[in-house]
Length: 136
Length: 136
DNA sequence: ACCAGAGTGAGAATCGTTATCATGACTCCT
DNA sequence: AGGAGTCATGATAACGATTCTCACTCTGGT
Ligand SMILES: [Mn+2]
Ligand SMILES: [Mn+2]
Ligand SMILES: [Zn+2]
Ligand SMILES: [Zn+2]
Image: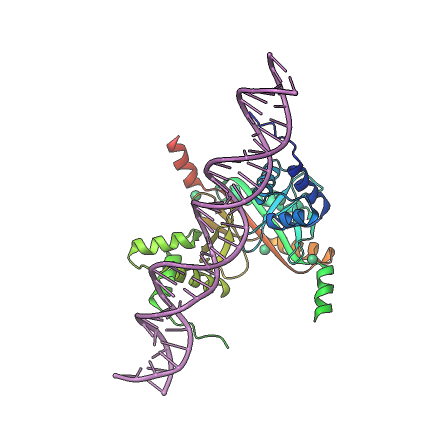
């Protein structure tokens, strides 16, 4: 039922690139990153691989304010949320202890089913704040 | 400094369309809706108007899982969140009493500044559930 | 009525993402 | 090793949402 999912050097390269950085990256950023590093991989393959990883729950995906998808290999595989730096993508994994229950309750209270929730925090990390100061 | 913002029949039509429905709608949906209703408005104008309304805080914007922007004129103008039906866009305005404080705290704890948060709940409303049953 | 300038809209241009499809790589069998 | 069958890749075309252009049309104030 499930395709074998072969391990190719391309897929390995994409996975590697994700391991390395702790930041959320777009498909295109990863594509460039790989090109620069020498492990050129077709853009289409980058997208395909990311999608596969996302479907398998191996990478987290979130959307920028303007709709661009960002990917990150998180340390934790269980459900969690993020505090992401708007300018560099650096992210911290966080829990919303109360949020989980609250979401489910609010949902059923209003007669909705199959509730899912989106909870992401955005901010500017200390490092980016520092370099912004330097530039002013 | 701020342009006058003239009232044209197009802007009125878009605003009207938003008043009417209680559901989150995409720019294109609104465009069609207006065309059908007789008040044809150029797609570009629909986008421009929605953007202006959003900037002015008069409509709320949220992003679909696949990045499409949805707009809704909410009853409340203060900060709030939504429980949205995945299939019809119907939405309920909700508060995340604890969430607000939690978000700010988590942010500063990790050295992030200018914290913003995204909290949206998705589900299937009772009405859509009913019509889904009927179809099976 | 008149005019300066904001607003409009058809269509071109962007841009992220997905679909095609011919070519290449891998697996398994003989 | 040789070959069939299958999955994967990648250049490129296609898409879909959104934005940009720019010539033309209104609005609002005098
Ligand atoms: Mn959660
Ligand atoms: Mn909030
Ligand atoms: Zn940063
Ligand atoms: Zn519904």
